[in-house]
Each structure stands twice: as C-alpha cells, then as structure tokens.
Image 1: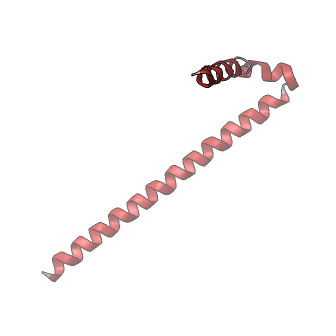
Image 2 (image 1 turned 45 degrees about the vertical axis):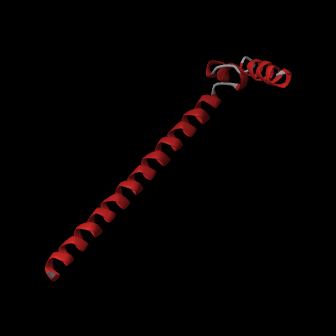
Image 3 (image 1 turned 180 degrees about the vertical axis):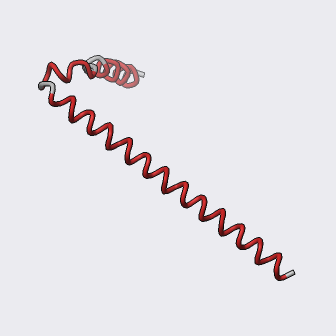
Length: 76
C-alpha cells in the first residue's frame, strides 16, 4: 500500500512540471514554431499516405474476392 501511494504521489507531481505549448516561443524563439508546424505537417502527410495505402489494400482484397466469386460461378 505504501509503494502504491508513493507511486501515485510521484506520478501526480510529474504532470505539473510540464508547460503547455504556449511557452515554446518564449523558451527558444519563434523559429521553433516553424519546427512544430513542420512536424505536425509531416505527421499529417504520413497519416494520409498510410490511410491511402490501407484503402488501396482493401480495394485490392475486394477485387480479389469478386474475381474468385466470378471464377467459381463460371465453373458451375
């Protein structure tokens, strides 16, 4: 029980030490906002490309299922 309470106190105190993004410009200059924007843009592009790849794989799997169904119907 003592270890559990110690863990709660330690983890609870850690969250308060972090500042919000509003301090990034004050901390290291406004050029860091450009880096943050570039990172967000890169993440958005990566997510979009990943979704596009999944959509293409789903379409290919759907086409394969349709082709298999047509081939089975032709044999009967």
